[in-house]
Image (cartoon, rainbow over the protein chains, first blue to last red):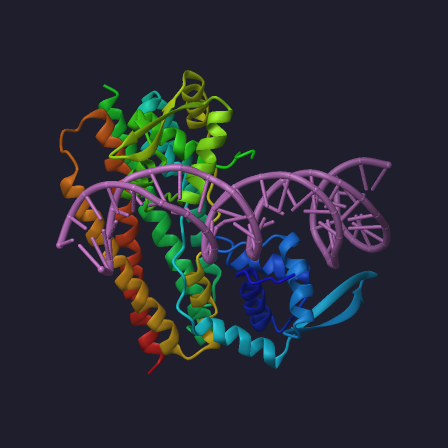
Length: 181
Length: 181
DNA sequence: GTGCCCATGTAAATGGTTACATGATTCT
DNA sequence: AGAATCATGTAACCATTTACATGGGCAC
C-alpha cells in the first residue's frame, strides 16, 4: 500500500504527458514509448493508480466507452509537484543483472558452441530491436519540438546501446571461434 | 528457502571457478570480477550457500584461519551438473529499469538544466567506470588462456557499453544546450 | 462461434535490499 | 587506541512478477 517504488513516478510522468488516461491506455503507451528501458505490467499499474488516488496525486473519473467501463485518471497539482520533485533528484544508478554476461563469464565450464549459441541468439534479438528502434525513429516527428526531443534522446540511447552490443557480440563470436579450433 | 533465483547460479559458478571458497571470499571475488554486470550482497550469499548445501549442490567444511571461523564450500558433482544445465539454457532477457532514461524522457516537465545536470553526473560516473575497466584490463593476463578469454569478453562488453553511453551523454548534453538557447 | 482485444482488478509467491547483530584480528 | 578488514548470519521490509479471476465487444 506504500508504493514507494519507482513505478509510481513512471505512472505520474505518463499521466503528465497524456493529461488523462486509463490504466489500460497507460500500459499501451508505456509499451510504445519506454518499453526498452522501463516496463510496467497491469498488476503494478492498477494498484499504483489506486494508491496514487488515495494520496490525492491523481483523480479518477469513471466513464464508459462502447459499453466498457473505463477509469480515467488525471494528475492533480500535488501530483505534478511530487513528480517534479522526483525528477529533480539525481537518478539512482541501476544495478544491472545481465544473465547473458554471467553465462559468458562461466563459459569455460561448457563447450564453446554453447556460449556461441547464446551470443548468436543475442545477436538476433539485438538486430530485431535495432530495426524496431530505427522504424520508430523514422516515424517520430522531425519537428524538433521541445517534447519530441526527449523521446528522441532516449530512443537514440537505445539505438547506440543496441549497436554497441551487436558489435561486441560479433567480435565475441569470432574470438570464440578461434579458440574452438 | 527455495532460492530459485539467479543468485544461486552465480554462486555455483563462482564456486566452480574457485574450487573452494568461503562466503566472504566469494563476495570479494564477485566484486573484483562481475560487479559491473552482476552483484551479490552478503545477505544473499550466506542464505543461498545454506540452501545450496541443503540441496547437496555444495558441501561445507568448517575451518579456522587466524582464529577466525571460516566455512569453506565446494561444489559437488550434482552441483556442477545443475550449473551446467543452467549454463546451457538460453539466457533470459534482462528487464532493464533505467531511471536516468525515465528522467530524460520526462525532461520536458522540468527546466532543461536539471536534465543536463543528470547527464553530467552520469558522464562522470561513466568516465570513472571506464577508467576502472581499462585498469582492470591492463592487469588481466594476456596469456589468451581459455579461461581468461571469458572474463576478457565480459570486460570488453563493459568497456564498449560505457564508451557508447558516454558518447550518447555528450551528444545529449549538446542537444539540450541548443534548445536551451 | 471462436479468438482477440478491451478493461480492471486481486492474491500469492518470489526475490532482493536494508538494517540489524556480533565479534575477532590486523594494520596504522 | 582506533579504524579497517575478516567473517557470518538474521529479520524485516519492499517491490515486482505470476497466476488467478472476470466479463463485454468486435472482427472474421
